[in-house]
Length: 319
Ligand code: ATP
Ligand code: MG
Image (cartoon, rainbow, N blue to C red; front, side):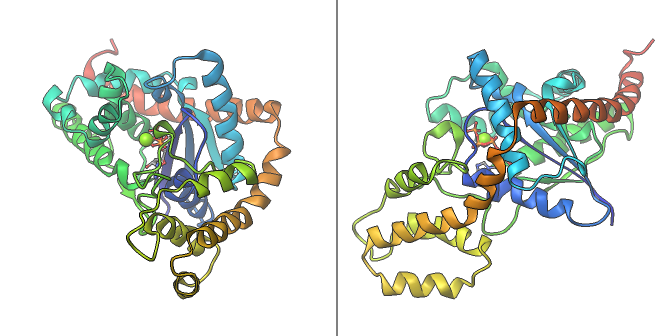
C-alpha cells in the first residue's frame, strides 16, 4: 500500500554509521518500494539546540545533504528539504507545545540523556519533541524510519496528535515509527549509543585513515575473548554487506582474543561498504545541493500549506 514516509537528521555534526543504518538506509530502501511518497529533511532548526556557530551550521547543512545523496537518496523521487525553508514547522511546533505539559516533556529519555552527557538544558532541547511532531504531522506521514532512541519521540508525536484532535477534530494523522531490527542502536566507540554530539562516532564518510583510527579506538574490555563493542558494530556492517551471520562467527572464533586483527577486519569491511559511496560523494557540488534544496523547499511548502490551512482554521487563527 502506498505510504508517506519521512525522516530527518540534524545538521549538528558529521553523520556517522549509526545514522546511516538507523535512518538513512531504511529510507533509501523504502524509496525503492513502488508508490511510496518519501520526504527527507535536514533538521537545521533542531541542530540549533547544540550548534551555536553560523558558519558551522551552514557547513554541516551542505555536508548532510551530500551524505544523503551519496548514500543513494534520489532527489527525483524524494522531497529533500531543509526544515528552516518551511516556516510552518515552527508554527505548528508552537501550537503543539501549547497542548502538552512540562512534566510530560520532562520524561523524554533523549532530553535526559543529553543533559546527563553535559549538553546544555536549553528550552529548545526541552521542547524538541513537539517540533519533531510538527515535522511529521505537517505532511500526513504514515511511517518514520528512525533509530531506537527516537521511539519515545514517536509516542510523543502520537500523544500530541491525540491532544490536538481531541480539542479540534480529526485533523492530524498518527504516524508510526519503523525501527529496523538489529540496527536500532548502533553503539559508538565507547559502547554507548553512537551520537554526533557524544564524540564517539565512526564517521560515515571519513577518510580510510579516520575510519581506521576510530575503529582502533573502540573501547574493549580485557575480560572476554570477544570484544563485544567491536562485534556489535561488525554485525551491522556484515549484514549490510549481504553476508551471513556465520561468516562473522567464524571470523571471531578464528581470531579469539586477537583484538587488533578483529578491528582491522571491521575497518576493512566498513571501507568496502563506504568506498563506492565516498567516490560518488566527491562529485557533488555545493551548487547541486542548493538547487536540490530549492526544489524540495517548494514542494514541502506546498504540501504543508494544505495542512496548515485546516489547522489554522480549526484553532481560530484564520479569521
Ligand atoms: P545528536 O547527537 O545531535 O542528537 P544523533 O547522532 O543522535 O545526533 P540525530 O540527527 O539526532 O543523530 O538522529 C538522526 C537519525 O539517526 C534518527 O533517526 C536517529 O534515531 C538515528 N540514529 C542516531 N544515532 C543512532 C544510532 N547510534 N543507531 C541507530 N540509529 C541512530
Ligand atoms: Mg539524536
